[in-house]
Image (tube, rainbow, N blue to C red; front, side, top):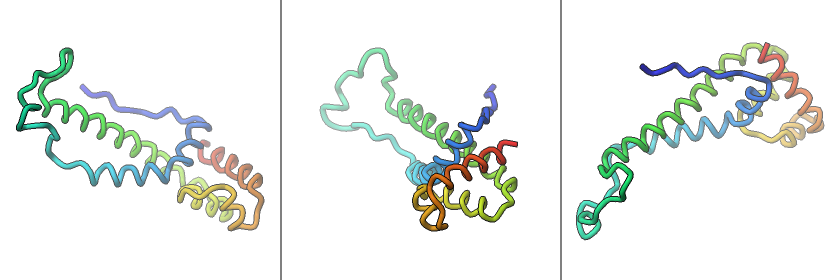
Length: 137
């Protein structure tokens, strides 16, 4: 039986999820696009007749399945983290906080957000901490 994965959400973990949100979304898109069927192994020539390395699986199809399984597990981990952030978005009701959270999820830096909103980047850092605290409650 497969165990359901659960995330332990701490302030630091949620902050990390917000920071990584943008690239995780892009990574999921790219990973799904590249999941095509077919093993990339030598079927002809001298490489096909050589013995396989000892201690591992010699079947190229099995190796490809193992690689894809690890790949799909990583996608599921990213999806879990993204979903966790999305489920907590409704807790942010202040318009300034919502605007800052939007730009953070878009992958913008705190300096860029500060310049965009006419605030200092240190003020953005403080607001970000408050956003994470509100989302964890």
